[in-house]
Structures are given as C-alpha cells and as structure tokens.
Image (cartoon, rainbow, N blue to C red):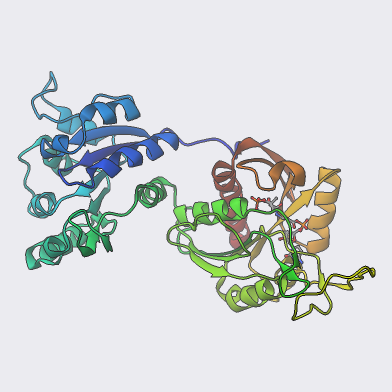
Length: 401
Ligand code: PMT
C-alpha cells in the first residue's frame, strides 16, 4: 500500500480565551481539538480566569496555560507560542478583545501573541446582542475581516443574560469543525463535490417500508472531510440521525427515486461524485396509500428494480470523477472489482457490510486502475480524509492528461 493513511505532522494551535461567560465552552472546544490529535496551547486573559480555571484547561490539554506575559522564564512566551502555531483561535472573543485586535493593541500576553503571529487568526465573538450591534463593535469586526482575520460566528440565540439575539458564540462542535477545516490541506479548493449518503426508504404502505441499517456516518464523514479540503459540498441524504456537517448543503430525501431526482438536479455542477448511500435495489411496484390491513391470507409484494444512480452518473457524457462504494458480506475483492468494472468508475471503496454498517470505525480497500490499497481500521473521518486524498490525486492526474 502507498502512504495514503500517512498523517501530516501534528498541527498546533493556540486557543486564546477571553473573559466572557462563553469561556466555559472553551473547555469542550479544547477537548474536541485534542481528540482530533491537535496540540492545543491555551492562553487566557486575566479576565477569562474569573470564568473558568486554568487548571481545567491544563488538565484537558496536558500543557500549562499561558496567562501572564512575565510568567515565562525567558520572557518570550508570546513569540515562542505564535512561532510554533499553525493557527491562533480566540474563543470566546469579547467586544473588548476584538477592539484590541482591530487596533493592534498588545497590552497583555494574548493580545501580544496575536500581534506577533505569522499564522491565521480565527476569532469567535461572544457577547450581548447590544454590544455586538454597537457601531464600534461592527466597525472593529469589519476591520478584522479587512485584515484577513477569519470570523467564526456569532450566531443568534438565547444569551446568558436571558435576552435573545445575535452575539451567541458558535457551539464547540461547530467551532472544532471550522478550526480543523482551516488546518487541512486544500486539495479540493474550488471543486464541487456531490455525495449520496445514508439508506433509502421504499414505502410498502402508508406506515411501512423497506430500508437498511446504513446510518449515514460514512457519507457524512466524507462530506465533512471534503469541506475541510476546500470543496463546495452537496450531500444528498436518505433518512439519518447523524449531525449535519457544518458548511455543507444537505438535501434530504427518502426514497431511491427522490435521491435519483436530487442527484440529477445537482450533478451538472459536480466535479466529483461519491456514491456512499446504501440505495435500495428494489422498490414496491404499487405501494398502498392506506395502511394494509392484517389478515390471515398470504401477502405478496411485487418489487421492481430502482435506477442505479452511480451507474447513471458515471455514464453521463460530461461525467464528474466518480467514486463508488461496495458493501459486500463475502468475497470483498472479487465482487468489488466486478462492481467497479460494471459501473465503470475509476475509484471504488469496498467494505465488509457487517463491519461497516452503523459502526463508528471501518476498514476500506480502494480499487483503481493501478491496483488496490488497504486503509486499515480507523474512525470514519480519518478514512474519509484518506479516501479523499487519493480521489483528489487521481482527479488531478486525470485533469493533467
Ligand atoms: O452509513 P454507514 O452506517 O456509515 O455505513 C456505510 C456503508 C456501509 C453504507 C458504506 O460504507 C457503503 O458501503 N455504501 C455503499 C452501500 C451499497 O449499497 O453498496 P452496493 O454494493 O449495493 O452499491 C454499489 C454502489 O452503487 C454504491 O456506491 C451505491 O451508492 C451505488 N448504488 C447502488 C444501487 C443503486 N440503485 N444506486 C446506486 O447509486
């Protein structure tokens, strides 16, 4: 196997916490980032320590928290920390701190660190709705955008003061996705990726139907990874309870016919199509509009084949680069290669249905014209990133020919 699963060098971020009630969410954010394998160095303003203790952040990240400009023996914490960082994230960022950043002030460790940086700065504002709406804050936020700072939020919602409005910090889960996205290599920048995910549901009558155990986890992970790599992503999803990836257009469908219609609607803009959905191969010929009444007689359902969405897309005259999936319960290699040839796709990811479906982890074998590559067991997001690195490489090669 070639080094598809090889991870880039560990990413490092400085997580700056300023003094607002949303500081408690920074603990969850730190935890999520560490979970993703990121080295997190926390730096807090003195005000932030009144909302959450440095001990909490130290325990979660495994590193002492920077607070005081003068606490470092060599007096150079600001330069050292920003030199090694791949990004600085301020979450939460108060109105006061945003004003400091907009004006280039550096009167404490965190603001000094921001001024002395040579890496992207991401700012997650959190404040009362009137403070956010204030002309001075709006002016400062505009200045940050003009300076190339990335603003993450705020959003509208219930605030700590009990009011409702704009100024609430994004949730930790969403911030973590945005931060990780910033750190990923942009292999798919400017590309449009269309993905199908989840199961389909084929009605038998008003309340019953035929479906399968696909959770949508694999397809949603691929959507998230594609977005991290800079793609514009459309996810056509069958019924799924998985949280929607941030920044992805999700088109909800139920049946294979609806999935097919949605794919036809979006495929013209797609550079890459990835069929992850477990599409029902058959549907009921004549579903009953009413609930079928129970009786002692035998009930026979007539099933007719559904259209093959992947084969349709791959056969389009101006087809996008197509990636198929194959869920097999036996003879994985043989059946997967057969499927790749039958559906005429350049890349196919095969997995064992009984291990993959519904699970958080998976194993994939990729088949392309040059051979096969095993992606060993890992969580679905890690596999999604590896699969997309390989797909992006093949797509790029194809365009160069
Ligand atoms: O959702 P999870 O719980 O995370 O599980 C993930 C998964 C096991 C569903 C996923 O990894 C997977 O294998 N998806 C493909 C499942 C499948 O239906 O495979 P298949 O061998 O039946 O179909 C082959 C390919 O044709 C697939 O890309 C499928 O999306 C596509 N297809 C199939 C039938 C059809 N009518 N239209 C299609 O586009």
